[in-house]
Amino acid sequence: MVESLLWFDPDAKRDLAEKIALAAARYRTKFGQQPDTCYVNTDQLDGLEGQTVEGVRVLPAKNVSENYFRVGVEEAAELKEAT
Picture 1 (cartoon, rainbow, N blue to C red):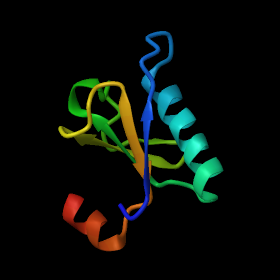
Picture 2 (tube, helix red, strand yellow; picture 1 turned 60 degrees about the horizontal axis):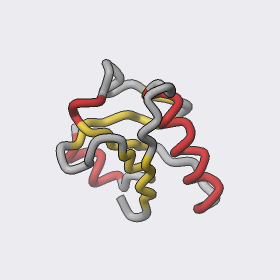
Picture 3 (cartoon, helix red, strand yellow; picture 1 turned 120 degrees about the horizontal axis):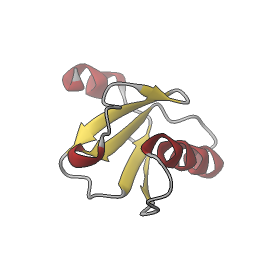
Picture 4 (cartoon, one colour; picture 1 turned 45 degrees about the vertical axis):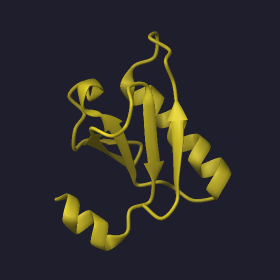
């Protein structure tokens, strides 16, 4: 990712999709563009791996701590490596 936002949301009352949507909304506000990817801790994927939430693809990441969400725009070369 060229630019990304690390979003923290420990609220147990919100589901994963809502947390990703909030992170994406903050990214849009801060950077003025739609993110296309969100990395989530592998233990928190809740069945959303490879799915999209409001146009944001959800991918696993061991290096993202629990309750953190790394949202941003992937470069074409990075997307090829991830698949």
